[in-house]
Image (cartoon, rainbow, N blue to C red):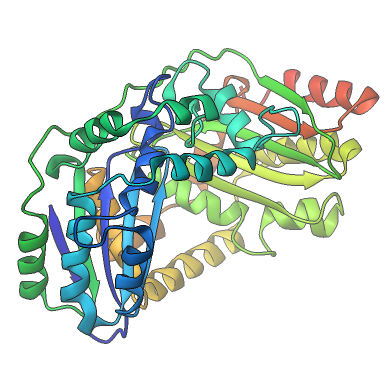
Length: 416
């Protein structure tokens, strides 16, 4: 599918391909292959036979190539002056159509260096986000790391890359988007010229994760660092659920600036850590609300307890009207601000079509503004339950602090 989001008053044009690829569509033997393929696609084509020549071709046109692999999608993009779009689109189509997969051993070394960032000196996983996903999804690919491990990456070869490319880079699993100061007819013609090679293929789908958890889960990983990385995670409705607008407004209540409830309670009023944040990872069939903080080791139980208390209070009384008013104002401002960004607009439109949940920015804003404080309260009550709670502490939480943290997590009753 090719879509065009014209905004002629902007100065930067954007071209991106969004693909249903990532760790949730892999198995134990192929974990990390989507991410490795992302790296290899920019390694050269018949006309641009090296990574250097690929990058030079786009940079001389005024842009930079970008690529990222997420759990359930990959994105390849370039932002550049609109007068460069025609030539850039031609190069872009070739990159994704005819990769040489050159210098595979060099790229393996680069990716293995990236993997080391999440490991300690003994080769153990110490990335709190990776550990939390494995705790939440112990038997499902949503619990895999995006990069895979070194052994797996070293096993990848040309045949595996080409098979993965042929399976995922197909029209039914991809969305091509041109956004910014682009002519719609010209952009559609470029899309046809440069991406007609893409076969229809099959729409890639992943298995639905089970939710068999009955009580809180807790994992402590010892790591010699100055602080403990803390993650307090709750299973939540999916991006496709009717509660999606309520989730978005809840996240505005929790963490949308330093005056919001989470930062004020933990940092300003409590002085328990320097920074704390909350985020929502939404998938087609599940979701997670994460609270993240780096804390002095012995304060990990205090921060966890305060986060859980805050959830209990929100589930009992809901947000104040003052909080709701601020959240509504900020979501409206952010929606207006999105219109100034070709990249953001391209992501909203392409992501919406890729996952079958498209709304225009105006439609999404309308749904968010209609959310009430009581809907937020009801949502929190449905989430703040022991069977949804997963807590990870990566650091040196020891002795009495370790016992208190484990007791607080396992003894939390939530809003049953």
